[in-house]
Image (cartoon, rainbow, N blue to C red; front, side, top):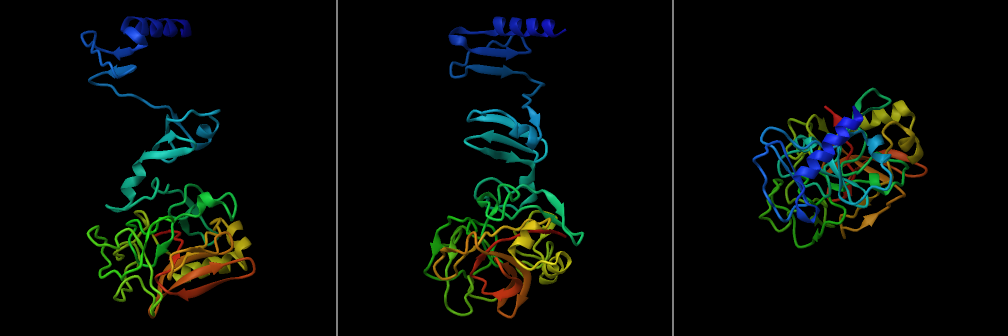
Length: 306
């Protein structure tokens, strides 16, 4: 049977081959188009081209992949291409994010894990390209969000800063000069917007600017506290050794937009507010606790299932 299939393939390629080693594969003998720019052309009116369908582990076992190699990842539901590393070029997951959501690279893969409290979370920070292999794994650090802002590009780690004023609306609008930029502000209350808006990240349905994918939202302060209590977290090592595997992603300064404490501390927003500040969980080598910080800071976001 294998010899028969091989013989048929050789026959198809031989009959359909053009000059200069160009090939047309068609299920219609009347179609013999001669497109000079293509070394391989496929033609059918009722069939498609099927990429290899593999899991992430199977993909990673491909030896010495060539740049531009294509596969379909069954786990992430993404078409992926290899260019020095594997990158998602189209995913079903994209529909999980709001319209106009800016993905700094590829969309964050939505992989669920269950924490020690029994709650379901994403297994990585928003913007991370993978779940963490260590607490200082730069591939899993992800974005830095200013509290309450939509993912219009300001959260990208290399986004430009905006130093000449504050946002006058919480709605993303690419007509504004600050759109997609990290807004700096060192004047109290050190917010990125000129008005105090407390409801921007409150839940999935009631949140105006929820940056999490469909079905997820930011955790509350109480939900972060529950993880600390259930896991008996006392420092950064405990936070990473938990099911959440929280890395030391650092943060971005509200005053000069520069990174700080990368590889030394982790800062994760909560949806909860405290007067004109917002709450977060922070940890380093010797401590972990809940704090209230100014909203112009850039901190990590880890989403919990609603």
